[in-house]
Length: 123
Image (cartoon, rainbow, N blue to C red; front, top):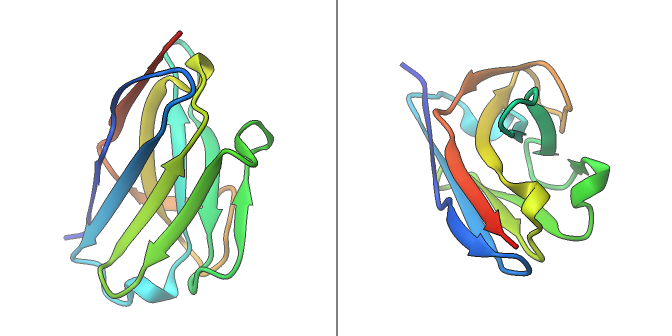
């Protein structure tokens, strides 16, 4: 059974940083899949945040986090990360990681979602 488990969320002041991790288990050939981070704020739909392709060379970001967030992966540890700097109150949301159906850094077409981790940015 595939499991994705996020960690690293918490409460931080505006301008601060957090590093989210997502560890995968039960997923064969982890290194062949693209991975992504999404978020959902209260009362809003889930939105794409960042994605990374199978070998970590190609990344994609939503416009609002470009230059502040960095996605990376460690295939030896079956883990994907999201480094979040210069956090803003509008970044407050539950953050989810997910596995892409393919190997690309996709903005859609994901399966195997984690349970989410709360990120709260105070002003």
